[in-house]
Length: 214
Ligand code: G3P
Figure 1 (cartoon, rainbow, N blue to C red):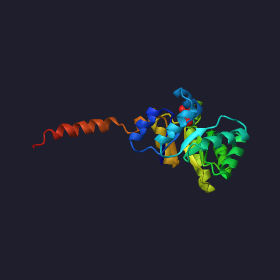
Figure 2: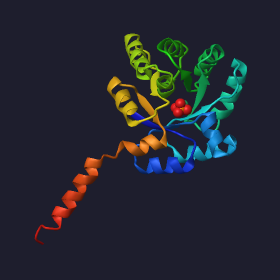
Figure 3: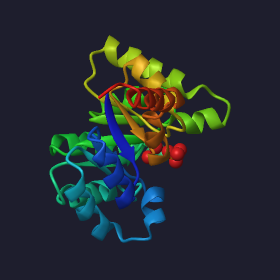
Figure 4: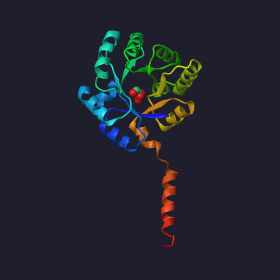
């Protein structure tokens, strides 16, 4: 399972990268707005930091506009993946971008049928938003499970990015289902490695080691 970081914050990226297990990055307009920076200046910097795929989202909502923006973003670096909203114009844009060899991450997916449409359109990735479904009383991870079944049934190569992750259990559940990728906010990424019994156990080993004759 691959771990992407869901952020546009340079410091968070550097800290996550230092762990040596970062496989890629996803951004969105809300995350970019938090940085207070121009995306045209930020994106080339992100490219220098992250080796794997970097998702950058279009703002246009019509097919021609999405394609124009996608071509400009994809020209920044070969590892740029274009985030396209899961709307009818987005599906058409996804198909066109595939024919041009541009990778897409179809985003704002909230059910398995939407994901099936994205896969049929030739999406490289599809991003079901789990936390936002949980927020309104649905079981977001059930959508991931259904998408996995459908993609396996029909041998789709579209990869599932579990997005809108809120806590470590979401990452665990995504891994158990066999999702290809989890895109994780830094606050959750930071929690994955920690366990109080690990810290307690390490302290005991180090204390006991002091009693070993030298
Ligand atoms: O980047 C897409 C997704 O992960 C957003 O998550 O926390 O805004 O629901 P969130």
